[in-house]
Image (tube, rainbow, N blue to C red; front, side, top):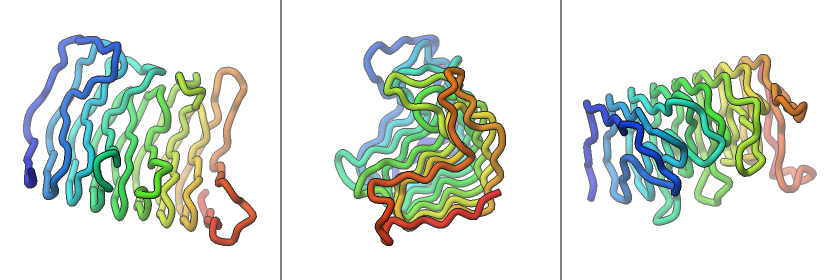
Length: 231
């Protein structure tokens, strides 16, 4: 089904707990969807995907609030976009607020711009998936801060942006006070420019991190080169 509109509502989960992974709102397949001006709040424990999407295209998610009452180190995301049923493309995630939870996105030719993400404890604040279907993102003008100083159930720390999508642009983001690196960069042929990062690498176990960490599977290969020009 295409052209689904989810707008102008608040879903309060009323303290409901989730021992297995549960989707609060789920949308699979189709294109031309619009999600705006919604709020999903009040989950009682971890393992919630507050907005769970799969295989969609040409979709906008904007001006919405996704909030957990406290951060959890078990899997959770405010916005989760999967490639399991099809390869998403042309997704625009704009001007959202995520509190105590982050986002994990698999898509191509997509935008993650001007979002405010704070206080999460699982994975990166913004994660683009290490998947062949994940490429060509613009990640611009986001504020990503106060990620937990602990590691999660997968022994991953809270990088501000964890990018595995090749041919991506990461620019003009503000990233501060996170347990892991400000930007953890693994996507090939990407440009990182004009970001401002401070106070990252704050893991309580001393594991630390960097302002920007560049990582890939074959760092000696020319095709894996990314350009870093951040402050």
